Length: 134
Image 1: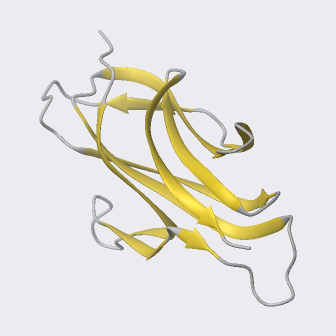
Image 2 (image 1 turned 180 degrees about the vertical axis):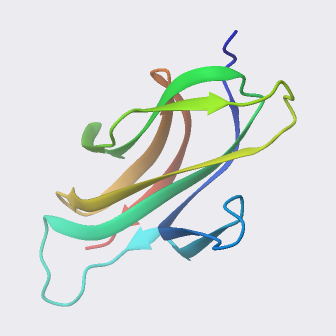
């Protein structure tokens, strides 16, 4: 029986790097809460790479997961990751599972508030704001 996971946290960063000796250990590089274009760079802005890392608990069974980047003012999705199947092994609801998504060359059409959203079986689990500065 599949049970929807409960999000404990989510961070947006520029990269997630697995430890070379222990794949269960990850390093989050350059946490992102705002992005300001370099001088002379105009919108639409293409950001080379972002990652979303989430810690989930209470999940059991298998479900479909994806990340969306949504422009808050326009309520428009500017990026949608491929959907991946996620399996929560074991039967211990207290186990914390880490998942991350890497997305390349995201195009932000204008400055403003964007939501980085984690979806599970077409249901929003958690979202974090990222502000694109003028």
